[in-house]
Length: 73
Image 1 (cartoon, one colour):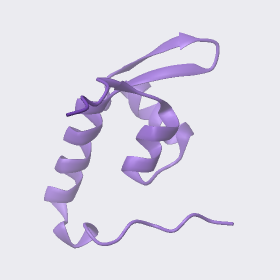
Image 2 (cartoon, rainbow, N blue to C red):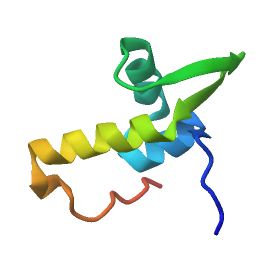
Image 3 (cartoon, rainbow, N blue to C red):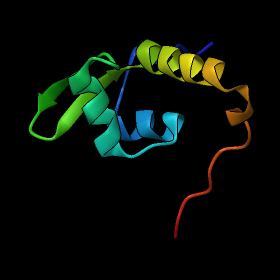
């Protein structure tokens, strides 16, 4: 069994949450997600905080748990 990493990148967190990279960084800066700047433009985001944030979001409106958004071309 492969263990998932505890920390993920901003693009990975954005994919999971269905938002932009900029929004994920704002969420970290506002304290809504746990994360930190590695260097320059690189950030690390706690996988657990992303899962918790998504779970809380879906509890507010279960109808949002539909299919993932498609990528814009």
